[in-house]
Each structure stands twice: as C-alpha cells, then as structure tokens.
Length: 228
Image (cartoon, rainbow, N blue to C red; front, side):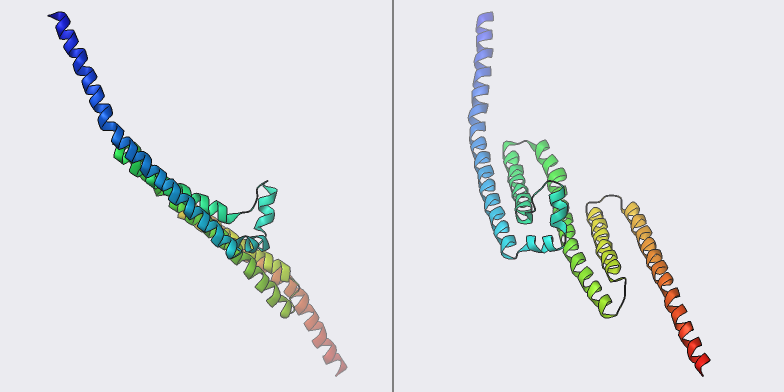
C-alpha cells in the first residue's frame, strides 16, 4: 500500500510537471516571436532615424555649435542620429519585451518595466533632444548677437555673444533636468541666481564702459564751450 501510494504521488507529480511544460512551451514560443518582431521593428526604426539625421545634416549643425569639440574631448564620436536611433530601438524592444513577459505571466517584471523603464525613458529622450536643440539655438543666437553688436559698433560683441550662447545652454540644461523630474525648486533657484549674476555682470560691464563714454562726451562738450 505504501509503495502504491508513493508511486501514485510520483506519477501525479510528473504528470503535473509535464502538463505544465506542455502548456508553457506555446506561451514561450509566442513570447520569443513577439520579442523577435520587436527587435526587427526597432532595428528598422533605428536605421530610418540614422538616415534621416544624416539627410538633414544634424551633426554638422551640432559641430558648428561647438558640441563636436566637447564630445571629442570626452573621447566620443559625435553621431546624434545613431544615438537617438539606438534609444528609440531599445525603447521599442523593451515595449515588446513587456508584452512577452505578459504572455509568460510574469506580472511583476512587466510592472517594473512599465513603471521604471518605459516611464523614464521617454523623459530621457525628450531631455536629450532639448539639449541638442538648445546647443544649436545657442550657437545661432550667439552669431546673431555678435553680428548685431558689431553693426552697432559695440566693442564687447564677442562677450555678448558668449553670454547669449551660455545663457541658452544653461536654460536648456535646466529645462532638461526639469523634464526628467530632478529638483524643480532647486533648478528654479539656480536659474534665478544665474539670471541675477548675468544681469549684474552685464550691468557692470556696460556701466564701466559707459563711464568712459560719458567722460569723453563731457570733455567734448567742455571743449566746444571753451572754443566759443
């Protein structure tokens, strides 16, 4: 009786195990197929983004903005299309990976990927785009300010252009950090301090320059009065 009971228990256990394996294999195959489809779609999207960025010559604009030199100093190669394309590819793969885990019934892993990875990655992509656009806008505005200042005869044209560029860069960095949810109040405090510092610097520079101009004007008026 004892042997029969143990035999029945073992037989029942193996049957349940075999049934579980049989039921799991189709779900595993479906999960693998879903993941492979996501990988293929991600690769196609990455390739399309790289070609589009090369077509609009986005990297050339970044090099003109001075970002290429900063990247080279860091020991990296500037290829924004591949960078953005890879981020998009991994985002798509992770999205399909979530679907694969859902098919396998791994709900805890699915929740983790949805809340942590898929919830945070889009914010990171937007922050990177903000930084790239900010670098381009900063360079363009710097050139405009320098050209306008030279036309107006100002001697501090390069200073104004540099302040404009770095002001836009700092503003873009603060927006990017805010987009990622990093210290909103702290960022506002830094931005306020930066604006005050720039205002004081510009005020002092123009004030000191204005003293010399005012002195020359007074001397000129005094000379004209003396001649009369």
